[in-house]
Length: 118
Image 1 (cartoon, rainbow, N blue to C red):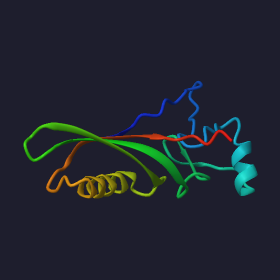
Image 2: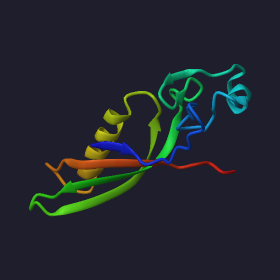
Image 3: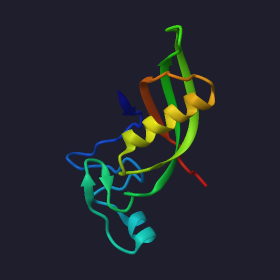
């Protein structure tokens, strides 16, 4: 199971983009970035953020060859709106392989978007 652990604030019936936090009332930052207002391409994802790479912290829970539960954490760039589940799964398989956990699989993958506060 893959899940995003990013807390979203809800304001009435309005959506809030899970990447840039724009709303239907205020997409000024998207206009500043792209030169045009954004629109919703899926729940809580605006058109200005689709295809953008975001640095994320990933946690992968898995069982090693002996069946013991393990946890692996790493950071990666995730392309938002482009089959995020496949990207995360392949990154976890690669990270497990790099760490010597051959033939292991992820039981649970979660990620947190790392915010740029500069």
